[in-house]
Length: 139
Image 1 (cartoon, helix red, strand yellow):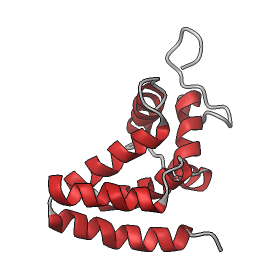
Image 2: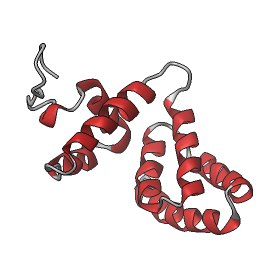
Image 3: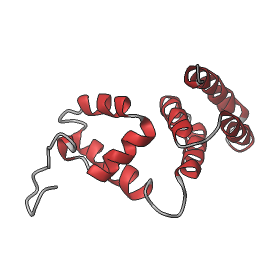
Image 4: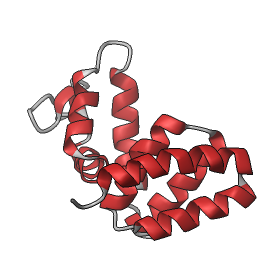
């Protein structure tokens, strides 16, 4: 928000009044192209939600000092598998690689989810991870 009024800051770096610090982290983790596509889809229905997740998830949580981004990615992958959020899992697998998790570490995280989240969930996660890791492998 800008100044003392409630009108959102809509500079090019903070479109739709999105928190600039959260937006920077979001771009670093998810990739600038994905984030720009999400911004381009903002409308009257989704604008407040996008402000919420950019400020609270990407600024308030992802920047806390208690865990590094690698650990936050590991926790996020596990939570997404546990709840069957497959589109978000694909997105965060790519983010986990950006945050420094190796493909081998991702496999180990998914192995852990087989026990604690269930084999069917891990099976779905491995199918997605196999595709993402192949797409993201160095040429």
